[in-house]
Image (cartoon, rainbow, N blue to C red; front, side, top):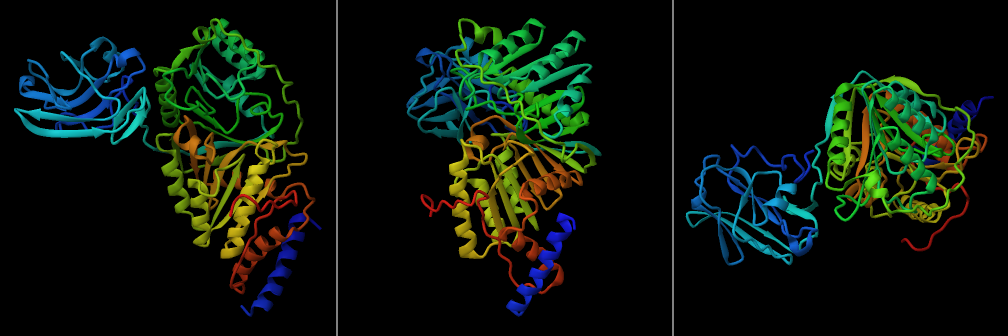
Length: 556
């Protein structure tokens, strides 16, 4: 008898028993427009303020204004505190920056710079007033400043931070795959590069990817690489040597970081290859894209519009204030971090790559729009939410909160977390906490720590499947730092392609126990069968730690 049939029969019997018993983009200050309306149509006002530059003595501070196109500037003034600053003579307006140090201001202000005799913006907070002929036109107040940040739309944003909107494109098909099952897919995509190959990542330690990038550069392809400057744990000597090799082959390599860093970490994992977009949950290293250890998800979208949007994210980051050429960053540095032996596992292709139909793809970018859009998707779930993550925030994190809220609406929620040593304890605590919530409120909710067996070594995926129709694939971890502080990239894939990731999730959820029917699985199957039979009046799915150890302390 097959495992699937045995489980179905067991669930059907349990259904009868239970029924009987129941009785029933635009970056800020980086050569792009601020996120404001067209200045020819918008009302005059104060758009942004940059009071606390990284330069000594706050040199280069500025205020961005929006004036009428044919304004007589002699009638306009800006008051900071009690001191009024005239905008000088001349005619003309639109969006302009006001600065006493125009040379430095021009490096960062996305606007023509008007030079004024003085400008002294207080780091501890200020009230700015824009007047015309002495009449107040607009006023802006800000509190304690953040060094290197622009105050715009009521919040502090790192200078050069982007404001990408969610973009959505109709597509016909995508290439779906998981790792470690199909490590050949990323290499195959890169091997086909003819015009451009833009690769973004957090860490880079792959000999195979290095070979692909060098070969593409030798074919005359424009090859550019963008990585995190200071990954946690440092950069190994081997990784530095690979980047040296890329530069020697004519590949443009930059790292994001330094004192003017816009984000906590540059953490995405994607590539733009001609008119194809490749987005992954895994790093460019043997354990990730090399298929030697991690469970990860990936998708290839052969669509020029999606590729153009993703290339725009890359280009804006590559030309930002915190983009540093590898040669410059490397100068005078040593890399003492020891070279750990690269992962060298061997795993079966249990879930082969497939070309699947899709109806649409959305590009999510953090911190710009990913958190709000993912919360919208979770809030819109009708039937089920499947989550596969390395780790998540505590019980009060925004995504966990949204998932529990969905369960309270009757949506089936299952969460599969990594058992890797560096996240195991915190994942156990979360599982134990949510089990108590499920027990107390009788929710259709389940979670467990994965025990991968021979299929993979550990979960590193950051994936979600909603209602079997929508899948989220990318670098976005379920924590607030990832959503609000890091640069992250993910794709929302709509259509039958989502079913591929659901099948992969189900295989991992089932685990390596030979099809044994744990209480959690029996309850889940019983709930499904009972709904079909219309005889089960309530369902309840408990949380389970696959290791059998329950940790009840720390979280209520």
